[in-house]
Amino acid sequence: MTVEMPFNRILRGECVETMKTLPDGSVDCVFADPPYNLQLRGELRRPDETIVDGVDDAWDKFADYKTYDDFTRNWLSEARRVLHKDGTIWVIGSYHNIFRLGAILQDLGYWILNDIIWRKSNPMPNFRGRRFTNAHETLIWAARSPQSKYRFNYQVMKALNDDLQMRSDWFLPLCTGHERLRNEHGLKLHPTQKPESLLHRVLLASTTVDDLVLDPFCGTGTTPAVAKRLGRRYLAIERHPDYVKAAEKRLDGVLRLPDDQLEVTPAKREMPRIPFGSFVESGTLPAGCVVYDRQRRLKATVAPDGTLVSGKHRGSIHKLGALLTNAASCNGWTFWHFEREGEWLPLDVLRQESHRLRQTA
Ligand SMILES: C[S@@+](CC[C@H](N)C(=O)[O-])C[C@H]1O[C@@H](n2cnc3c(N)ncnc32)[C@H](O)[C@@H]1O
Image 1 (cartoon, rainbow, N blue to C red):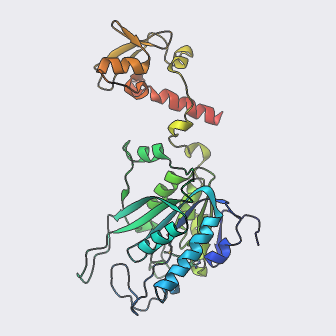
Image 2 (cartoon, rainbow, N blue to C red):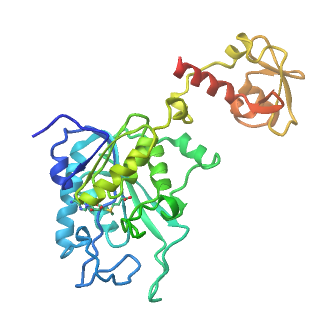
Image 3 (cartoon, helix red, strand yellow):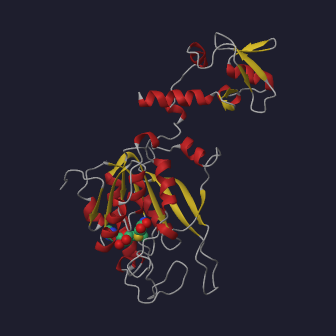
């Protein structure tokens, strides 16, 4: 039965049963950190191959691969049903389960977009010295189907990476320090709490403000915490009551960033097409101003019609940039710079500011 859509809540329960209560296509993005398939060969092993004594994390115990695969198929099917047709899913795992997850994702009709290697800057050593240090986890990012017009905030990722295309290998530390939730004895509250930095990147890459993010394996609430801070709506499912309580307490301490601080670099297609001339007309960069290339070797003067003049050459910001550098083409918005309060800024800043103004108007 479908009930009214809840959001900004942590639902206590089994994820497949709980997802069944959600409407089709109601979620923009799923982030899932499912239980590992650790109890094979009669031993309970950590990802680093040390045997764990006295662990009672019942969620980690699957008798065999078939049981694990059946469970995986069930929750991935429900996740796909509740996902919007253009939505995406992130699934994180280690060598224990990621290949099984990947195959089942493809079998169910998801369309894999990337596998991301989360390289840990501070991994656990391999205590027995019988294998390589297991220093990464893998995230699979997939669209609901090959036809999905999914969201990828390319410019935002590029800005986050000092203006270089974001790559598929992410170097981030494990969750430690003040971020790590601890119980009253000072022990880790949860064995696999993920770092907020990882979720920050995931959510910034694939969602926008007010999108609904679903985490079917909430644990300590890392996904809802980052979603709340970044102004996304969230819904998380967790079956262990202690983790639900811990996650709710954590969320109480998280503040949503104010609207004006949630803005990020707009995608090129979201930028209005503003002719350079309009900045000349409005007096933002009036005729007679001088603009330079980044190294300040080339110079041009702004003409009243929005063209640039350099010596005997005249042309649009793009044409003149190309002409003076003997290039086939040139992006005049990033090539030419103007001075403001002692700082040299690319013309593109004018477009970005104008875009921001339109958004807040
Ligand atoms: C790998 S942990 C997720 C950790 C989380 N990403 C974090 O940062 O804290 C998986 C969580 O899923 C929960 N879980 C396992 N099976 C579940 C199920 N069938 N339904 C709901 N929750 C489940 C476990 O209790 C555990 O907290």
